[in-house]
Length: 233
Image 1 (cartoon, rainbow, N blue to C red):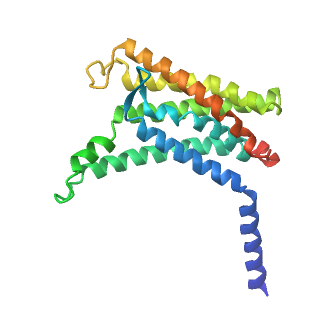
Image 2 (image 1 turned 30 degrees about the vertical axis):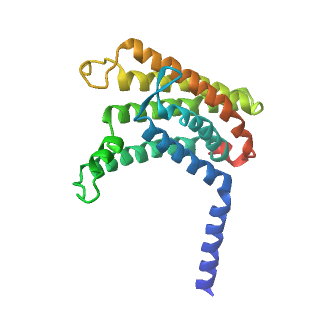
Image 3 (image 1 turned 90 degrees about the vertical axis):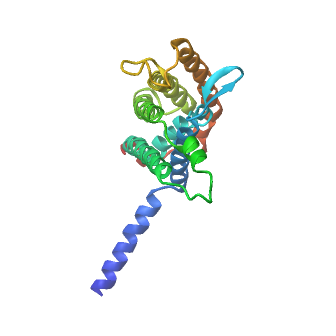
């Protein structure tokens, strides 16, 4: 009887934990991590769009800010902060694993070892700049979003997303553009260093694209209902 009672108790605890996390939260967290990884991989390419230089992660990365807001809405501030840090760790591990995979000698019969290394071998300056920009800007986004919800109003969900993104996106853009391509001390001769005019061009064009993607992704905040328990999390 005692064993049965303990088993039933554990089952109830597991069931309570499972039901406490909405399915929507699982989907949003998975989408956030996936978008972060996709953005970091594609940011390794600098493309030309409408005649302007732009890292190709720009078109997917801004969505992560709205997804972060959804996580905040569903799971609370502390869980959103934990997700941001965990995403950075995953991205850093991904870059390290790709670097290791690229360094392993290729089977001669495969014949694509050099291509793999050239495409997926991480450029550490871009990796570090990207992850630093993500962590700083999204933690800032968290604070602005939380301030709006707790000090201003819980209504006008579009406004909380627009305000938090409007502050955090330029910060992200500045850290990444300058960190990855600016003529910083000890990096003037680095092969990724670009003239400041080009860095400014990257900053401006990326900012325009990111704001555009923010406006497109803004309605996502309405896809999930309010979670009252998240207010205290």
